[in-house]
Image (cartoon, rainbow, N blue to C red; front, top):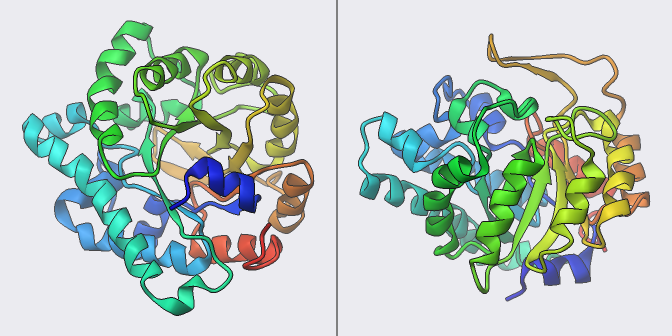
Length: 315
């Protein structure tokens, strides 16, 4: 059984999955809810399992759990007690692990493939707010207050069979430092930290990506630095910025190139998004160790990325 670190070392660039919520919506599920995709942990967990299977069939080497928008605080607002919230967080991992194991049990699925891994998604505080503020990070909480929010979920997910913790769409260095402190206190655990960015140089909150890269480079248990839910036209520059500050592998999984309107809760086309076929090849040339997608990127897109990286022989 390989770790995420091992997978990156032996098989880069690996293929990440895409937007879980996007794919659920494309299947007709209404996610207009503060819990977003985590709503289906309560109402229809089988739907989540099916989407995990679709991404595995498309060629994903890593699938990400439906816990991005899940938190004990968020479940509490829905009237669930702490024990029920913990059960749902653990369920998010169990669904992904079961989907992965079912996929891997089919001999034909093993041809030219590494055993896929499961990443437990940990979204920013903004995911609980459900107002799109992960794209600017301007919420007035101290590091201590952010820790109070994040720590219970972190402890639960760190105690699951997930192969790696995926701290995603982090808009600020302040919030990243909270995750780094929790990781330091979790012996034997590994995580990637992935940032949302507003342009080719800066985090969504405005500070330079290279400074965040330097901070994560000081924590050995960080197995990769990521860029996600960011416009694809910025990714090439951001890979270069990240590599200025860290020796860790850089993984990228941007959105489809649309802009999110947090007020109206809708995506709007961006004419500057560019061509993914050309972009994926460029990201690989620049040294991206993992490539996938975020919002609006579905299984068909992930299959396309796998094909662009050379099919099953992505190493």
